[in-house]
Image (cartoon, rainbow, N blue to C red):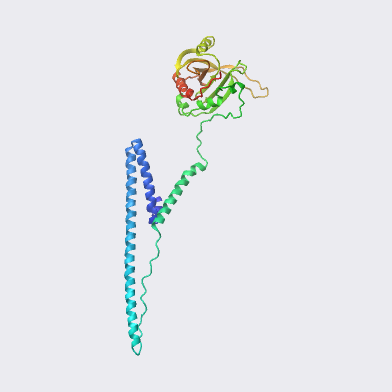
Length: 352
């Protein structure tokens, strides 16, 4: 169908259009072939370039033929003009001789022989070529813009973005200088495009992402504790920052009095760190007429990597926690990889 439509176009529209298409496709395919080291693509690009070169040769020959035809027509016109001028001179001499005789003689066909009619003006070839290129450019622009202007029918779920916190009123402790990071900033750092891949589930997308700027419990609002949470179908990842004076050694000492399991100290990003496991808490809210909630129950096991806020371990720490509703936990290397990717992107601030 496309070939039939191209054959209907005039020569000076069709050929420049084919040259533009062939050159653009050939150069693009050759670039991709060189970048990807693809021999098949290189051969295909060479075919397009050879095709374009042949079309250029055809157009050049047609232009030369038009130029030679114009030169021949100019020469023929000059010869006709010369013949007409000679005939006019001969007729003038014959009229002079006729006036000298007593009886004038009439000569049929005494008028000048009409020259050949001027050929109709042909359309400008370069004008047609420019018009063809302009039409092709307009069509390409329309095809480029149309998908962006028309509504998409793609029903693929898009990853959730962090909920905006512009209207959230920050606690007073967040207004100190230097200020601690906010929950929104933690969410932006945690909600990375490669987070699912780091978790070992690259096919999953984020279902919810949020950040809150809280304060630590039992501190009367004097310790900032922002946190962010990103949920997938398999895992949930939480990152929090606690801006207190507790060093990692003191934190490990407190763990001995709690229910933490599998405690393991290490160094992450040049900072003291510790692994620990503990159960999450879950509770049920009843939205019925009574409005009461169920008792707080023990939730699935979670694995946490706590990393000091700075290398000198002057107090405060980040918690990177991962859990799943099934109770399955990823390897510690997964949490370590998340911490090494996420923590360097969090602004280095202290609330003290």
